[in-house]
Image (cartoon, rainbow, N blue to C red; front, side, top):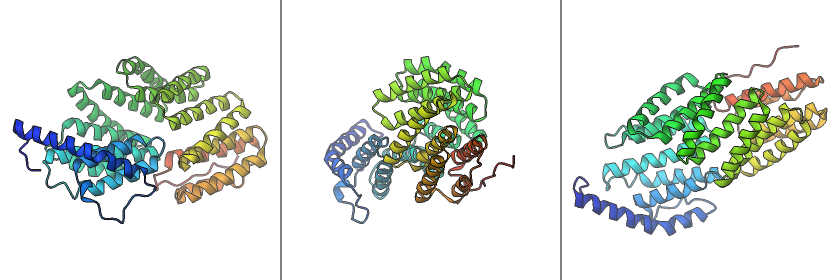
Length: 385
């Protein structure tokens, strides 16, 4: 494709070519999405070697991230194997924009799976592409936003704020209210991680009217869920449950069952904090099984530790130890890393005193949640009583 896109006729020729490629790609992508395994060892068919095919495959993969995140990531990785060998015949602006979009979706998939280090590596490659002068400043701002979000999940709060401020200033220059709201939502999550629960709650609550006005339901679901988490930590359990119920409504409307499961997990923490340990255990057990079914072992392990906490509060110590052993084995099978297993080892000899045992479980859970992909950290056990 050698059309000169600086001319009107050339631009329309490129647009017609892409439209034809996308249409031709639809049945091919549908076939690929239906496969149990991707054809990594097979030569890529010539009919797949178009940017239209890559664009359709990227869209198709993004649609399954919620229910099949591993498949989504594999499909997007396969798309990268297609796009770069065929980059040369196309206008640089087209190749750059489609490649950046592909890498953005792959970052979302890796974040969904909890592999934040891999997400950062992908972002670095995507930013290298985006430094090309043909890439829009808006795309670059989105990459900065994703880096800030990833760093926030990794508890690298100060660095996250630097990237987030850069992104938000760029979005302001475009008048992109929807993404400005998303930046503010990430800021609220960073305030929560710093322990400023009041400021985090106020930021989330102030955002809700604007997010509703922009009809950004996905961000609204995230904000309600995160607001619920903040309010649980602040001890405002009634308000927390209301926020979680609002989140459930949004995720149900968007048909995103895994996100509903995450909110159910939050409702379980409300019941745990309220002293309704039997109900909390029931919720945690159900959510854990659903996470395992979606191949999210770290999330399943964390909610499993909440189930252990609830069992200890109920005085069901033997069952608590059995669940702790099961969680440890599942995480070991998931190759979570040595430092996580070191932390889990401290569950093998829980104190006979329920309050002490629950403290140990919460300490281990907090460490795993914070450290899952930060291998430089080491687990520090609680001191003696």
